[in-house]
Length: 136
Image (cartoon, rainbow, N blue to C red):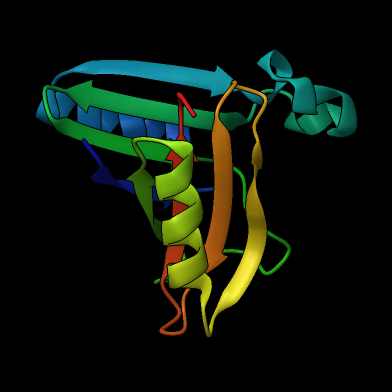
């Protein structure tokens, strides 16, 4: 079943932020550092300890966060994205096409290193969307 997950960008504070939310909300916290991803080879040495991706899960509650940011930096409002966890390849491609219409197709749907499909867009209202399909 498809769902929406809040995805936060908190450069340099992700571990602190997610530890706080775990203390508040409980659940299981998973943290992936840059050095533990295929991206590590293209990242500067001082970024190896930064958080590429983190996820806090407690039942149906899921919150994600990263230290990573685009070249435009992070401003209030751009630090939150809505993530759609899609059921299949047809759904992720359909939703990506519809949501990006009139907006910006920042990263078209393509294979991701974790084995699924991933795409990133900003819709015509300025809302950031991350679309993921773990089992295409």
